[in-house]
Length: 145
Image (cartoon, rainbow, N blue to C red; front, top):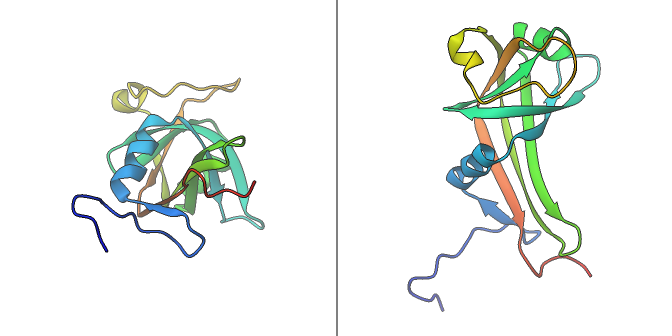
């Protein structure tokens, strides 16, 4: 029997809660570090990045190197963010996929709340257009103990 006024969340066959696109975007806007996966080379590459959500894109500040080269080629990419509590066996994960593009380092890009963490010149910007976004949450009490 379904209770009136109770929203039932969609779950996967593993019992994970499926996050809505709105919840995924909220988590993207509240988190600043993720892992950027690029598949255009001989082997997939994964890089930790700090980012900012801007409209329908994720923007990364970078320098010359693999990320910028991939953006200039318009490679497909995925950005993954997450948060886990290893003691409570809970957590969530959000994955964005899209096409990378170099973004002009204009006044608008430089005004983003996005600062380089690493050493060296990081005066280039790359955006990943959000083509798909999905997320999952391990609800409390579902982990193996």
